[in-house]
Image (tube, rainbow, N blue to C red; front, top):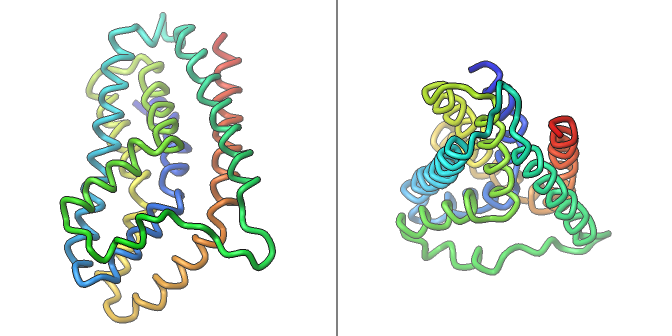
Length: 223
């Protein structure tokens, strides 16, 4: 189990540091429905990661992801593909980063957050955690890394739970600050939103570059 958990920590950190979900949570917390939409978003976030991770583990288990304690060839190839995709994402994010005094561009749907209901907050969180291309690649990579260790079903479930917990620290932090600090949270969350908005491209570039290189290295080592 230790090996499986060790395999997913970097993936979890990569998902946790995604700026857009963190910004989305901060904006939700500033709305009249913030007290319900914030926790609803976290619920959807956990649900999306857990469902996709479980599906990948089931598929990988049926396809024999581990052969004699070593990663199957197809897992190594999958890691190479995912690594290349992340490197491509890193390049795209770097090219699209704000320059000079240019304002960061945020998704248009963020302008409608004031009207979000809890079900919509859950749905948006699922989309950002499990359908967003960058996070989808990381969740698939984490689940494949767990499966390749050959750990038992129970150990795989624990490793996936640890990954989900780590991946939730990013969007979960603003919610904890909101409920823990009360009125003092407003200024802190506003500064966090501004900083994450401004540095979104750089953060995403670094995450994608580091984990992409790791996946490619692991894939080459397994072939």
